[in-house]
Each structure stands twice: as structure tokens, then as C-alpha cells.
Image 1 (cartoon, rainbow, N blue to C red):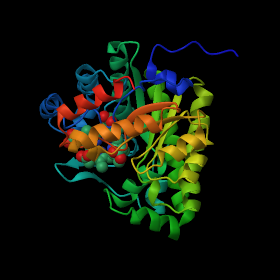
Image 2 (cartoon, rainbow, N blue to C red; image 1 turned 180 degrees about the vertical axis):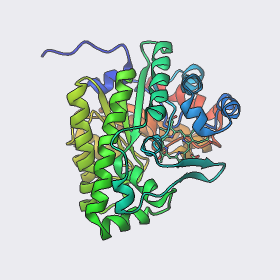
Image 3 (tube, helix red, strand yellow; image 1 turned 90 degrees about the vertical axis):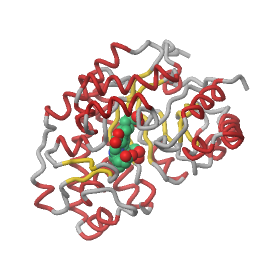
Image 4 (cartoon, rainbow, N blue to C red; image 1 turned 120 degrees about the vertical axis):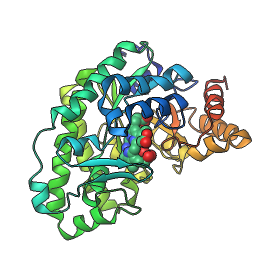
Length: 348
Ligand code: CP3
């Protein structure tokens, strides 16, 4: 068999087909408020969006968790809501309240969305990626990202985060074709934004579908699987070597099967996933990334050690990338992250 040359990066090697023990490790939201050095830069920047749009600062906070913990991948510091912002949607982050957007909730507002991303919003992201790339050791992979069209649409239609994503679900039920136009628009915008990140130096991209789990199977197929398939095809056509990880949080085993069929290189698993069934189902067809409950990392102690051990054992025969099942929480103790790094890299 003609194997591709092994990547110097364990993270990228697993996405390219290798099975490694110990598994490579990174954490969703690894640059963030649990780190004192992040809080300091965040204060200097003043607000979250200024931090996202100032390349030197975004690059600095992207590198902080790599320096402190030696993770195997860096994820560019940005936000999934940069895409609607670059489509002209007003966006702000009020302290402690999460995002606020000018709602895009009817046919007229959707038709008025521009076809191209505002360079003033996306170029700083690409500049930050180039800066991080120049500073990273070759063994550390660099991840770009975007939100999946469905998840981004839930924020655009509601104008904020919601518990049950009811505004977007209702629009999809009442005006299916109108909602489809919004999703189509976001597919094109996501492709453009991911291409920009890969051109700037991202080795892999992750597509965050945080709210995939609230949809019935038919809607999941229409609003999550179909759009993801279009993004994967377009990105791989432009950049055949780019690795793509999908994170459809809350998806069922059957749902994940459809996500894998889009041609992604890896799937992110939340902590509710049945790891043993997944390892059996997918074998080494795709990399499995996850899936420690972020609350285990708050709890620490014996609960943390035991769960890390179970995850490594359950996924020992799989192409495993160790990660959390969702983003790290701001109240997480640094000593627990240090323990995680030690346990994940221990010889079994
Ligand atoms: O993973 C990383 O370290 C990279 C950076 C990153 C951020 N957001 C930084 C951020 C990534 C990959 C995201 C993705 C994101 N953003 C998602 C999908 C993943 C997920 O967590 O479900 C979503 C839904 C968003 C939208 C968003 N951004 C919300 C709902 C919030 C407010 C809630 C919160 O956690 O504060 C944000 C703000 C945000 N994005 C922060 C960070 C570090 C906190 C802002 C601050 O520093 O005050």
C-alpha cells in the first residue's frame, strides 16, 4: 500500500489515518476565561470582539494554552458569530449576557444579506492565523473553524442564544423555503470563510454544530447533513489535503453515520456519546475526537482520573483525538487541566 508521508504532528497524523497511543490532545475553548493570562489580555483589549479582530492579540491568546500545557493543536481565537457579523449583521457581547445580534428573521432580511464577507471582519482572522502559524512548532496542528449553518442560523433568527432554538425551528416550519435561503447563504459564507482560513495556514478546520441535537431526523438531514456535505465538497475541491472535523453536538449514532458519509476526516463527540458503539461502528474509518464531560474537569480528583481512563480504554482501538465533550468552563481549576495532560499522556 502507498501510504502518505507521516505528518510531524500527532494530531494531523490521526486525522490522516494513524492510530496513536497515547492519543493527541487539545480542548475546545482552550483559550479562554479559565486562564489568568487570557483574562489579562482580554482586559487590555477591552471587549471580546476587539480581541477577535486584533490579529496580534488573537494570535497571543491562541498560543497561550499551547505554551502552558503543550497541547497537540491550536485553535484560532475567534467566534462562530464573526460570519454573520461579516455579513453586515450588528453584533455585540454584553458582559455576562452572551451574544446579541440584529435578528435576521424574515424573507426581506434574508434577501438583503450581501453575497460576500466584509474583508474588514474576516481579514484580521486570516492575519492572526498567519501569525500563529509562523510561531507554532511543526508538531502542533493549527485549526480554523466556523459554525455550522444550522447553529449560526439559530443565533441569527433569534438575535441571541436560546434554550431550545425555537425561533429558528419555527421559521423552518412556517416558511421552509425562506429558511432554506438563509441556510444556503450560510453555506456559501462558511465555504468562503474556511477557504480564507486554510489559505492563511490552517491545517484542519472544525465545523461547530452546537445545536444539531434539537432536530428531528428529517430536519437534521435537511439542515445539518446536507449543508455540511456541500461545505466538505467545496473545501476539499479547493484544498484536497485539508482535514475537516464535524462537531454535531447531540447527534444520534444514525445521525453521526450520515455526518461521516459527507467525507469528513473526524467527528467530535459530546460526553453523552456511546464510545464503545461508535468505535465498533466506525472502526478506523474516521477519527473520533472527544469526549470528556467538562464537569469532570471541574470536579477533578478520582472522578476525573477514572473517566480519562475509561475514555482511553474505550477508544484504544480507534483513531482517537482526546478532547472535551464541549468547551472548557471558565470556573475550571488549572491544576485539573495539568492532571488531564499528565493522565492522557501516561503509558497505558
Ligand atoms: O475554542 C477556542 O478556544 C477558540 C475560540 C472559540 C470561541 N468561541 C471563543 C469565545 C470558539 C471555537 C468558539 C465557538 C463558539 N462561539 C460556539 C460553538 C462552540 C460551542 O461552544 O458551542 C458558539 C455557540 C459560540 C457563540 C458564543 N460566543 C457564545 C454563546 C458566547 C457567550 C457564552 C460564553 O461562553 O461566554 C461566546 C463568547 C466567547 N467566544 C467567549 C470566548 C472565549 C467568551 C467571551 C469573553 O471572553 O468574555
